[in-house]
Length: 75
Image (cartoon, rainbow, N blue to C red; front, side):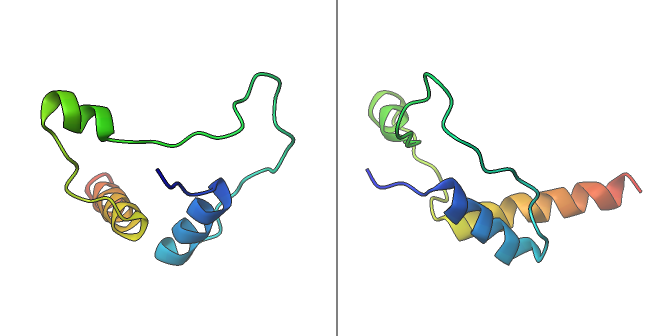
């Protein structure tokens, strides 16, 4: 499966929110795997479930919208 780098995810979050995303780059820690990829494949296979959204822009936009709405409710 294909995946996205942390840098690609940060770039999308900046693009969608219009805000800088604080982060620190650092060396890989001992024991960190060289690559991690999230997948809904097992859920699809065993639970017959698939996500409604899978593209990064939609996921980040949806999360940002929910966050903005929750902020409005609590202010």
